[in-house]
Length: 137
Image (cartoon, rainbow, N blue to C red):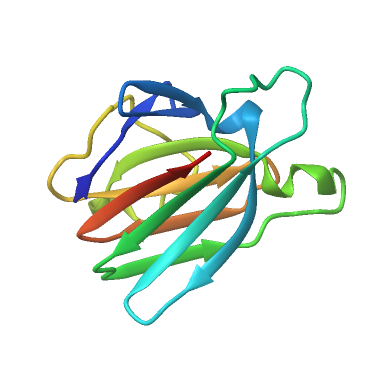
């Protein structure tokens, strides 16, 4: 898997030397399924702790997908957590039955998947050739 970002502490990414806190500063806005790709689109949230110079929108584009897993979360107790990222991680594709653990890797190994897990238990897992992050001001 080729990526243009690194994962920091399983809640943030580094893009062009800028730290992006996905857990605290962004919410999942929407997903888009295309012919051969998939998008996770995050929007800067309205918290007073978010810096003014933070990106407004982040789009993760997954291309060359060979395996996709999606698990719906539980919105009964805390529906506001549906779009709050819990962890992002690269994880071995050899253990696809595990979607709630993480590794402390900044970059993917050759046969890794990437997992986005949310506070309500929602999960997106991709096996793909490339993940591209696009940041917009």
